[in-house]
Amino acid sequence: MSIWSRRGLLAAGAAGLLSACTSGDDTPGPSRPPTSLSLPGDGSPPPRPTGTDWSQLARHVEGTLARPGQASYRTVRVVENPRYDATRPLAVLTVASAADVATAMAFAQDQGIPVAVRSGGHSYPGWSAGGGGGTGLPQALVLDCRDLARVTVSGSTATIGAGAALAPVYDALGRRGRALAGGSCATVGVAGLTQGGGVGVLTRAMGLSCDAVTSMQVVTADLRVRTVSADADPDLFWALRGGGGGHAGVVTSFGFHTSAAPTLSTVYLQWPLSAARRVVGAWQSWAPAADPRLWSTLKALGGRKHPDGPILLLSGTWTGPPDRFEAQLAGLLEHVPAPAVRSTHTRTYLEAMMSYAGCADIPVAQCTTGPGGALTREAFGATSHVAYDVLTPAGITTLVDRVEDAQSSGLLEAGLSMDALGGRVRDLAPDETAFVHREALATVQYTATFPPGRPGAADAYVRGFRAAMVPHWGNHAYVNYSDASIRDYRSAYFGANAARLADVKRTYDPDGFFTQPQDW
Image (tube, rainbow, N blue to C red; front, side):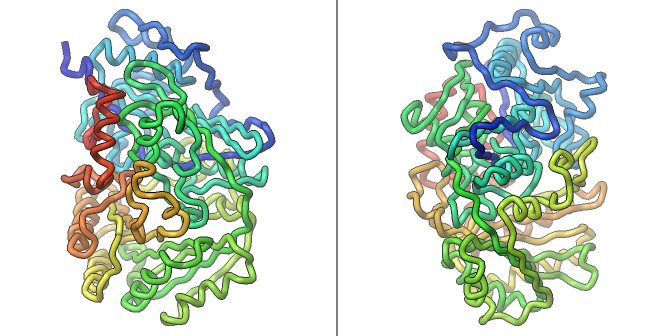
């Protein structure tokens, strides 16, 4: 029997936050037909399929199984990062329910087949792609949850399928006057984003995405379909809010508490990189300590897309009274050079979030990548830091030098972005959820987009940038921006919460069915 007979490989991609809040309406995802989340009434595992051929699995599920050689396989195997287009999973099962997930897991356990789990398909190391193709992983059965995209809202509660993407979620929420804190990428799915914590443009005003979760439906390694909450399987509920996906179960839906949708005031500022020493210095003192209703990100970018030289970009979002926005910005602008570009807007929650997602003038059904989608995929490499310390002048000089290096790297665009924490993130203690970085100043993302054939150059750039900043920011990192090269990843991602996560792993997956390269 294969070594994988009881050790499947489960990897959830970094995905996005979903929520919607209506008055009891159901809003399916726009790009796929709505699917049921109904389960066996007693939550018991489904019967195991027998036999060793794939047709056995296909006959026991409601969803669709795609295998190499089938036309649908060429479409469903694709993830968001084109660098992984060479992956060739053993099969892709587009699941239609939690029962499908349990049946597929039973099949994988019986046949010794590794599995990979996909929500939005944004896993930075490609762990949701299904193996091979530069991921360094064996070929696997992909459990594609993207058809679990239904949004059901009742009062202030939203129930959202694990595969729902940000653009349709924001559309469903905003049309009903509700809001949820999440990211700005239109195609990110809820499961990855939320299980890793979930940072985004409303984080300081509303907390992390995982902070709004009230319950989750999850299939564990024993094939049980559980509804976990603070009262039911509380340790697993704790772990799945900040510990990342793919370690102790497959989440198929979430219950969220939503907030009343605020009016959003937004600002966009731009400087040349020559202003970085003053702007970075002022921003890192101002942004994490600002009024909790104000969030901002500061980016420093170079590369071919910036032939006139690297730039600094600041994007900010204010949920307070619009007439007080200028006073909030003054806390930064009074200490930095005048920006070369400045624009401000006041929008509804829905308008602002769709604009952030790049979908302001696009029908929500087309706010996707792939066939029929209006958004473009771009190959990239990435890694991360979580910053607890303010950079010294020497640290800012290192940052500037590394951004300037992008100009001669041959990369399309490369640099970093710093997203402010603080505010409502600090309402919870570091051990109240698995997301440990409650006291940090910012999450930091190093990214590099590249032309065809240059993944090595992108990886070398972002990892070299991170290594140069380790003396200033230490080893802390964000699990949703996973990087296979981070050696002490448990400490980097989870800090003091790592030991409790390992206990949860032993309790809910004692045989190690869910095994990914950076496991609990």
